[in-house]
Length: 67
Image 1 (cartoon, rainbow, N blue to C red):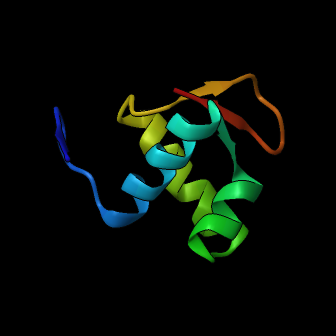
Image 2: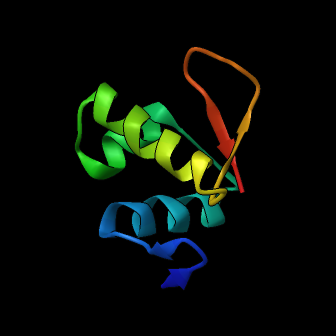
């Protein structure tokens, strides 16, 4: 999939598909989905929010990310 700002990597595609299916995604769900550490999951989500692929809902320690 290609969006403004460049193509999605495999991790981003998995996270977006999960968010589309479930309506939101948390850092803990990304940890399980991608089998990565908490810091890596946070980094993936922050990058996706910065690229406007996802929107953070509030400032929770474990953020919920909405489409």
